[in-house]
Amino acid sequence: MSVKDIKYNLEIINRRITAACQRSGRQSGDVTLIAVTKTVNSEIMHKAYEAGLRHFGENRVQEADRKYQELADIRDDITWHMIGHLQSNKVNKTLYMFDTIHSIDSISLAETINRKADRTVPALLQVNIGEELSKSGFSPDEIFKAFETASKMTRLEIRGLMTIAPLVNNPEEVRPVFKKLREIRDQLGLKELSMGMTDDFEVAVEEGATMIRIGRAIFGERIYK
Image (spheres, rainbow, N blue to C red):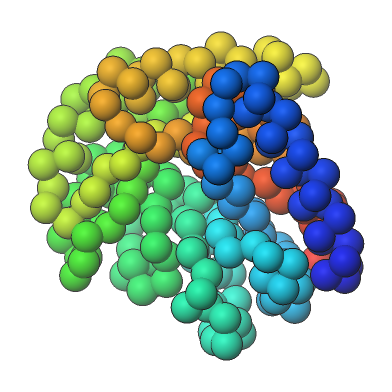
């Protein structure tokens, strides 16, 4: 995959973001595109950087650590987002590499981050809107108490909410999920909404996403090992 290929894909994605924003009365500048680089190697990530991308999302701490070392020439010009499930025993490395953590899915994890951090950590609380057994996150009923507790932690800055929508054939089927997360976000008075991926990001943008996490539409199928 070349820089030109990535630029071409980004042009298409950005046009779709702009159109979705226009349909919902928003500005395209309100939406941050995070390139999901799970299994995407450092060489391709460097090309993505050359194509203009600055926000990268990683799911696995160990994989991210390797890339962080390999991309030493550009890593400080990248905003690193932790978007996958985070185990408490990986918090130290996570704090070393990542600028923002999207996936705080328990109070115990929040407490661990707060205890180990030596800086203020921008973070999002993960909400399992569909209450799917296969997904982590606070339930819609739990999130209000969780936010009340986490927002008092001195090393955490809770900026918003994140969700992973169910996999469906028609993106319209997950519109209620995104709408519900936006309503909860508004009730809590937060700014960020991390929601929407390759198959459903336009609906997510229409429903208020401020961060979308795109992998396949940028890099193709996950073939880069």
